[in-house]
Length: 354
Image 1 (cartoon, rainbow, N blue to C red):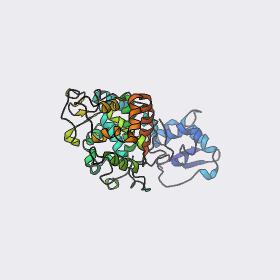
Image 2 (image 1 turned 90 degrees about the horizontal axis):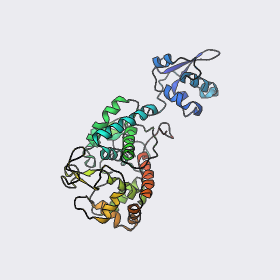
Image 3 (image 1 turned 135 degrees about the vertical axis):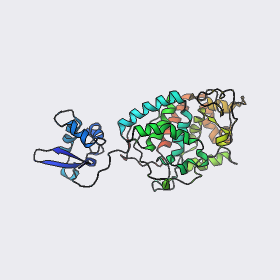
Image 4 (image 1 turned 180 degrees about the vertical axis):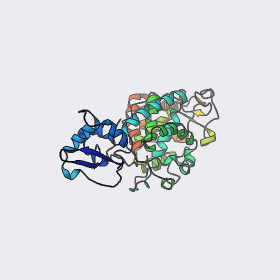
């Protein structure tokens, strides 16, 4: 059958469900079995079983070391081992790097990953009702939320990569693109894990209103309401705010910022908008320096930016990051990784790195 592997044993030919040899059960055969789980029957047949180093031989050897109770014989269709294929994720990351070099789309890819994850509500246990990094932002109903204005352009940029690597979930692709954009802009290495499961339809999208506003009446209280609901703390709120060192605000999308400034009128990428920093495609701690000084009218300061140096708890971290980029990078990398996992359902449950 199309979903089964036929393995030779000393006594007979046994048809074994592919899901039963998932790497989570076979640590010693992780790489080989992970590759098998994403191969077609014809590819498996072509691999053969004679080579001592062939994936099929390694998988068979690992199976023979399992107790019989761990080997299932079933006529039911078997799921993939992982939500995403690790090898396809690695190659997709290289394609994202090339996309960044040509489209200068670092900021919008960061925003896409954040907004997919940022709908998480820690007070809801059920998946996907709890929101979070589950790929729901690919659906039109969620893209039309006010806070997601313009993100359809990010989805269009990534869709060709998604089509090319069909065994990568949208949830993983969005978070991979976001972390890669930070790193390629000069930011810290993000300790990411993958294996996020996608929601299946638009009816599973979260309701509108879970993402932060730029100009609420009480900025500090609003930031805490939104980010505490996600399970984040004051340090993480300030560290994540530092990602505004990348990008621009466009009044036609958010209602904030100037149509263009001396820093944005010539691009790179599509010209226009108002940036928070002079070098708005470089990830560093200049956001905190510029917000603190407020000497340049061409640089954007939103109410939720200014409050970082007004609220006593936020100010402690903002002041620190303004003078210590290494501390900012350490705290940012941890906060970004935490955000990217919010609400996600992983397969395998512990996730995997690439």
